[in-house]
Length: 199
Image (cartoon, rainbow, N blue to C red):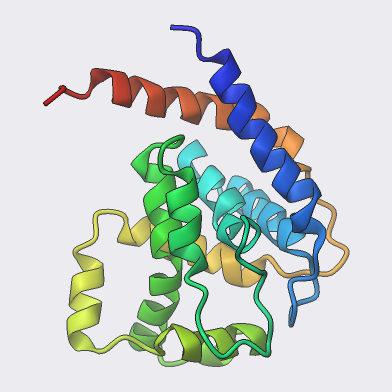
């Protein structure tokens, strides 16, 4: 199976997003959207995370920069649900162990606020504001439902890197340094799709 063109097309789209809209200010934070995601991926690599989680960290906020959604603003009064937009954008190209932690990383923030009394106070002001729009800390039934999600632990890890990846002027590799990793994961998704039984 010749997967090269499909790999190139998706990775080209991601590179374009990072290079174009990713340079926009991540309003309320000290870094751009792309720099934030690149820092999160670098943190995941330092901690020895598997490739799927490095990719999830790298792409977790891509929903902020896919048209027509705007990046977060501290003036927002509604939740853009960037986690769902990002997951939908990536789902046809990446396996569930990449996409699901991305889909769940906002829920992971709400979860951590519920199970760790000190967590909310450690959030940046921008993240505290978005937490209100996203529904605040989970209640008991929501916590139980979240813990039944197959990738909830992975989502919590992505969330923790998300909180840490906001350091001004921290040098990290560009998205080009993740090309081979992304190509491998795209091929994994293509293999899963090809092997799935037809109905």
